Length: 400
Image (cartoon, rainbow, N blue to C red):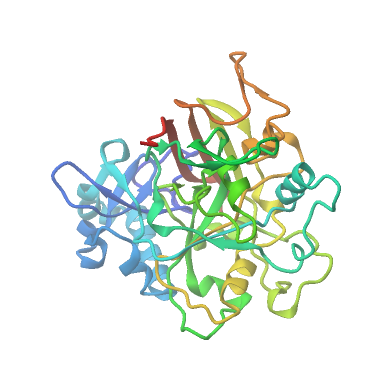
């Protein structure tokens, strides 16, 4: 790819082979759509004059569909390469450190999956030591749950320690109070652009016709609340208090070089989940930092179920997609300890405290802890593209 007149650093994760979308504002101005380029943001509302980029949400643009996504990406790339456009474009290029980022989409539905075999087996070994680590259905379908869309928030939103019922195995009855086992889940999220019709499943091969792009997700989890409530219907208050997303949505077009073959599935999934001709495993590496220290590097490429299979399963019963739907991968964990994407795995449910560089230890999160998750993937012309960061600081409970 040709160089830009913006003189981007060669190692920029936000180079011309990325061009992620976000929603930003500056002091005294309304929120609008921008594209990250190096250390800058290109103001799409101003440079295009198109009101769809002045709504404060990506939804209007995403609903226009793949042909419009491709056309705008090609136009922006051309503007940033061809110096004849510099005079028209440069006045609308703003320093990224001088803008405020907002939730990029108007949230429709939120679904979270459970698609890492390593994560599922770790959890099974902890809590069902006398049974097979995977439940009988796990290798036949992507397990998931419907989350609370209203508590999906932008990176940087404070993480208020949740309150709820907890019951330890040694206790006779539950108690109420702040979660003592506040955790993270390092995940990858997929944003739906093009809706689908109620009653019509979306096949694996139509994934790219509906999914606009990818972001980083932290599905904060209160493990003690979750453990007491999840039988028989699954997570509720242990998950619904906050889910954080990164401000930048990387378009699928930027991830062609990151596509890899998925793991071997045994047994072979049912026909609607077979993806031999449409593989959408992605070579994405996440990094999890606690108070600035790197504690884990989960590998998304090892996920058993891909996002295309998750979308096919999500709609196989006829459930419709809406612009602004978000579905997340579930905790990304690899086979090695340093690739585990949650504290419940890193500390083995508290039995093996994690030792930090300053000598302190953690089993689960303490008030004042700051967790930051970043992600990168191979770029189309070498180097790596960045998904940015999702960050949150734990603040004390407000049980009242």
